[in-house]
Image (cartoon, rainbow, N blue to C red; front, side):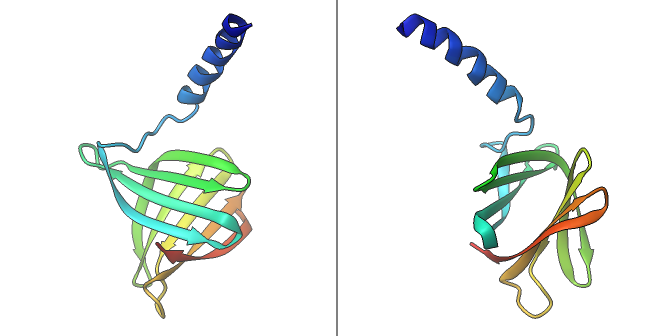
Length: 121
């Protein structure tokens, strides 16, 4: 019984490791951490060597890990953008009125499907 459980768990753990291609570890530094409405926790990391931006989110709907993000200053606020297929994720680092606030926006086929207010943690 233990052997069959181990044989079943091994492919699942290998698959889980390959499903998260961009990893945030000692090779990356945390540049933004937010807690958003709806239980969304967003962390933006930057790889020390390559400069690649990494997106890590935990939520009641599951976890998401993305790489190859971009960063730009828009209206005096930094915005981090990531893409996964037909979805785009924008994380606003602050607002003009409150630098400790922010916003998470999710787009599907370039149409907004979710917008949550956030607070830096």
